[in-house]
Each structure stands twice: as C-alpha cells, then as structure tokens.
Length: 296
Length: 253
Image (cartoon, rainbow over all chains, first blue to last red; front, side):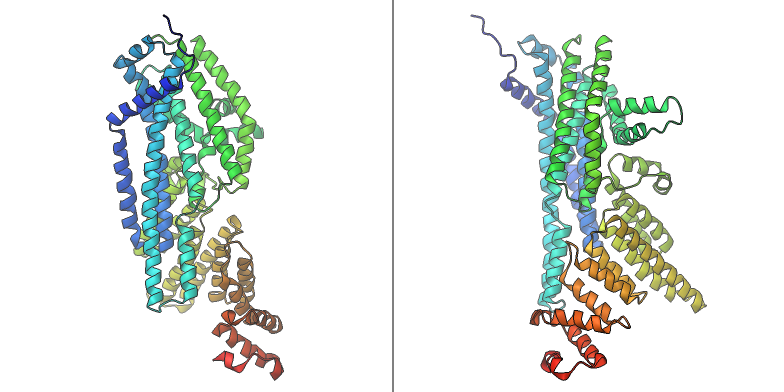
C-alpha cells in the first residue's frame, strides 16, 4: 500500500534540524565558546584596575560586543558550509531521494543552525551574567566591609549599592541579547539563501560578509536616497538599489546603547523582532525558490 | 539565470514592502535614544579606517571600550592631551554612556587641571593657572556636551554641579544643576540637599536658602544633617531670625 507523505512534516524538519546541529557539533564549532570564556573572564580580571563603574561598563561592552561578533561569524561561516558539505558527502542525495521536499530540507538546515545559535547565545549569556554577578557581589562586599569599618556612612553604602546594581545587571540586557540572536538568525537565513545558488562555500562566505558590511550602511543609503540629494544622475538609483536589495542590519544593532543604559521598550523590541522574523521568512522562501530547481 | 533574475526582482519587491516599516522603526529607535552616534569623517581620522569600519559594523561600544583602555594607559603615562583626544572619540562613539562623559570631564577638570597647576617645570604661576583653567574649561565642555546628549541624567547634572561649585565657585549655577538633578528619575536623596547648600552660598539669596534648608530640616530627624544645621544656624544669624523661630539648640549637637 502506498502511503501518502505529508506536504509539510515538522517531525522530518526537526529530525533534519537535529542532525544538522549534531554535524556542526562534530565540526567542533562550540570551541569558540572557550575563546569567549577566556575573553570574558580574562577581561574581568584585567579590568580590576579600573574604577568600579568603568569595570562594569568595559565588561558589558566587551562581552556583548564579543557575543555579537561570535554569533554573526557562526551564522555566516557555519551556514555557508552546510549545503556544500552535504553535496560533497552526498548526504543531500540520500535525503532528497526519500519523499522529502526540498523546502523541508532547507527548513531543516535553517532550524539546525538556529538551534546552534540559540545554544551559543544561551551559553555565552550565562557565562557573561555569572561573571557580572560575581563582580557585582565583590563590589557590594567591598562596600559592606567599608561600612563595617565605619569608613562610609549607611547612606553612602546604600548609594554605592544602588550604583553598583544600576551599573551591572539591568533587565535591558535581556532584550539586547535577544536582538543579537535575531540578527544572527537573519544572517544565517541570508547566508542559506546565498548558498542555494552559490558555487562554493567561499563564495557564500564572501558574499555574506560583504552584505553584512553593506547592511550596516543600508539605513544611511536609504536616508540619502529619500532625502533627494543627487550629486550625480546615478546616485539615487544606486542608493535605491542598496536600500531595497540589502537588509537593514543597523535596525538590529541596539546593544551599543543597551550597554550605555538605554532601555528597549516592549513595543520597540516586538517591532524589531517582527522585522527580523519578516526577513528570516522572506530569505527562507527565496532560498526554497532558488533551491527548488537547482541541479544537484 | 531566469530564477536568479526573479529572485532579485522578488528581493526588490520585498524591499519596497519593508521600506516604510524600516523607516518607521528607525524613527522609533532614534526617538528612544538608539543610533545616537554621529559617525563622520573627523571621527574616521581619529579612530583610523579599521576602527571606523568596526564602528560602522555595529561594534561601536567595543571600539569605545578599547579606546577607553588606551585612555587609561595615557593616564598612567600622564599624557593629558592624548587622553583628551581619546575621550573626545569615546564620547562621540558612545554618547549615551554617562560614565564616559562623567569620567572624561572629571579627568580633565580635576586630574589634568591639578597636574597643570602643580607642574613646577613651568616657573610662571600665571601660566600654570591659565593651563589649569583651560583644563577646567575642557572638563566643563565634556559635561555640557554630555548633558546635551543625556538631558535626563540626574547623575551627570549632579557632577556638573560639583564642577561649577568646586572649580568655578559658581554656586548659583551649581544650585540649578543640583536642583535639576534632583528632579530626574535617577536622582539620589543628597542632590536636593546639595542644591540647598549651594543656594546658601549665593550672595543675596539668603532668604530663599533659609526657607529651602528649613523645609528640608522640617522633613524630620533623618534629614537633619550636620551641614543642614550648620548652614541654618549661620543664616538665622545673618537674617536675624527671632529666637522662638530658630531651630533647637540641641539639634546642633
């Protein structure tokens, strides 16, 4: 009896996603977490010579900056390898020989890389928050010792504790970290789309890195395009192409201000998140479209 | 080839759809205080091409942190000019960071100014005082620029008050700065008291200062700090407050 295969099977996608994650883990992608740990812990030790306010600011700057760099790099480099590696090892043929539609295969790959990014962000955030918590408690313990030794008044102690708490963990850090994840997810879906028509992993990486840089200037290009400044006849059409074709990555670069204490409101976070999902969805659909007819 | 052309066309259509969303989101983010840095050619000259590219690529805070550590090395080597330049760059990269504005202003107005005044290699005291004042002004500029970028920071208003009071002896200006600081969300209880102390030091404002200090004193024993009592006693004498309206003698001890 011939059983009809479902058009869209979450179970199959999950299986392929999990398998992709396993493959990436075997490639020792998680080793970068060791570098991150060394960076954060080393940074916190080195910064002990700075004043307490500076120390926390540096720790947050370096940790969130490193988190952003690492997630973007993983998103681009790991995703760029997925399809060429599967083609080289002929895994693609084995999978697609079964009743698995190509769009499910692409979805599985995307899910795998998103799982990798999510685990990475969780581990990095956990490490960063633990170091921040230790630093906070050390600073408060120092202030308490000064209070016990009657070097500072109770009011000074309370002011110091409030300052330390304001300078260390604030709830704003969490949406900031989530925006880092959304940005990396967007980059991975973009890279996956490029890899569906690219001839090699190197080409995909270079294209994605170039788009990464252009994407951060997209907002500037858009502003100039819409402002009507036209020094040459080709300026505005060129800016329009940049604004329409490339993603606005600046919209997902909020951590610089989050570190400085600027709050992300729920509304703003949701709008940013929805834009990110919109990008991921569109790049996924385009990846499916481009991959659907690719000769393997 | 055909598919690639269709994909590019679809991307352009998608771009047209998302454009209004992105413009709206960019405006919302800017009004919430995001993307506040101005990345221009002078900054590019200050931080070099690589730093500028990094700043453009969403790593402004990381570049700022690196330059801040450089500024700390400059501090250890007593290179005030280099420090001032680095502070300028760091505050341009991270204009929303109160700490950077505060520390930049403080280093210039206190450390660099004192060092300039104590610099015995310069025999002329007039020139040393001139150099000292120049560093005060540099520090003041950091605080004022910081307040333009962060008008709602009580902490920065209070530090500006410290500068006006301790370096310029502009007690009226300091009073306004502390008073503004005390109205902000991050205000500390002492800002209000500091405003009162500054008002008490302004010639011709004794009556207002007395009423201000008295209002704090009347809040209860927890607010009756030695400085409040001291200033009130002086003003009672100066204003000839009748004995029955004066604060209790025992409170002074």
